Length: 206
Image (cartoon, rainbow, N blue to C red):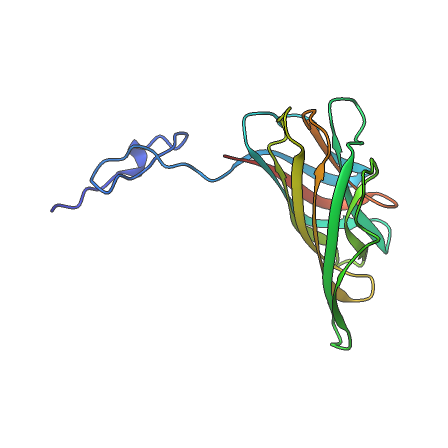
C-alpha cells in the first residue's frame, strides 16, 4: 500500500483532525485550548472573570513561577458564583509532603488547618512560600463543570513551592463549591502582600 502524505500547508490548523486508520483524515481533538493568560506585576490578585462558561467541561489553571513580594506567605484561591464577590461556599480536604534541601527532614501529613467545612473564605493551595529571588510556587488547578446549575462544582489542585525553610513542599487540595449556581470567576492571591511576578494560564478541556 502506498504511503499517503499530508502536506502541512494544506491543513487547516484551526480545525480538529482524526485519523481513521486509512489514508483519510476526519478530525483530531486537541486536548485543551488556551483561553487566557494573566501575568503578575506587583498584583494584589490574579483574576479570571470571563470565558468560564458551558463551552468546556473542565477548566485548567497552569500556575507558573508565582513569586510573592512578602516572605513566608500562603498561596490561595477563591471562586465567584454569580455575584461580584469571590466567596463561594467550599468544603475541602488537604494533605502535603515535604523534604528539606539538607536532607535532614521530610514528611507526609493530612493538614487539618488547610481544609474547609462550608467556608466562604479562601482555600489555601500552598504554604510558607519563600520570596527568595529563586523561589516561588508552581502547579495546576482543575475546575470541573463550573456552569452546572444542578451539581456542586468540584475542583482539585497540586502545587509545589520552595518553602521559606529551604524545602520542597507539594500540596494536594480537593473539594467542591457547595452551590448549584454557576461558577463564573476564579481569583488567586497571597495571604499577605502582592504577587510580585509570575503567570497563570487558563485552558478549556472537553
